[in-house]
Length: 67
Ligand SMILES: [Zn+2]
Image (cartoon, rainbow, N blue to C red):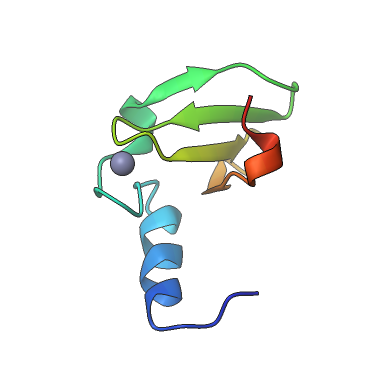
């Protein structure tokens, strides 16, 4: 786990369903359907997130997850 000053702020933004870069609501971002349980969400600022449809939580996508 990355530990720095930014991390808690990013975790808080994600817990609110917001982009960590621009603060926009990810519910309004583009969703690309991927695997059934995980959806790829791309923000306007081109950051990519994974929405877990079971928990309805967002997290940053790993580079290898971006397709
Ligand atoms: Zn953004």
